[in-house]
Image (cartoon, rainbow, N blue to C red; front, side, top):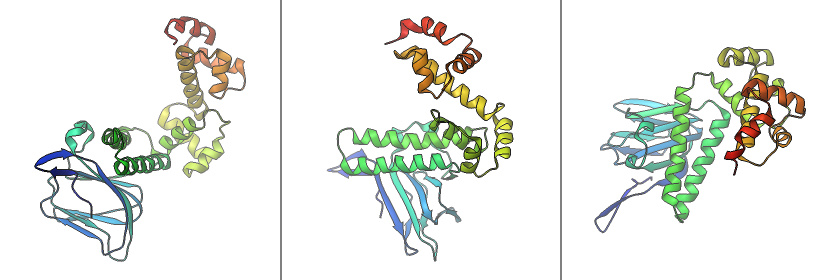
Length: 270
């Protein structure tokens, strides 16, 4: 059973992060009529779980992140006939940016983007490792990882884009240096190429190619301003195979040629 992360040793209370990975049958049930002194966050990897607060039972599925507020009477566990594979962590809210924490007693957020699901899973793996090892700075590392999850939730909540477009933008960033094909992107997000192109334009106001070029140029400008990469090297680093095309796109988005930009930003280079 998970423990509260507010521990007491010889009368001295201190904050800890406690985390675990459970794969539970339908015999698993936790009842806390007085709630907890800390936050509980869970991330469902597979199967199905439930949370009951104020007499209302809600079920969680794969990709659901759940946050349970301190002081909230609750019950949670695995529904009859099901199994529940999930990772969890207890943490104290006083060590977290309060703007990232929900005000509701129970918050359940479905993560629809595959890339974000994978990212959150790997964040929890880091939390598990750091909390068990308890090496130097382990507590700060765990809190930093938890903040990442909370910021990803906040980003999803404030996004004005369709989740499939968010996933497409993530894939473009991941594959910036590659030759990107709309058909492959479309398969990755479960749409036809024509539907993805239309939805992308509708959401972002630009085509997939335009978004990719803008992303590449912004990255190239950072390389020119803050590294010793020359224009040709920066063009190659961000995925442009044709230097003349890179120059035209750079002028389109930045307003000057790569060489002019490099000269203007030269004093800031390290």
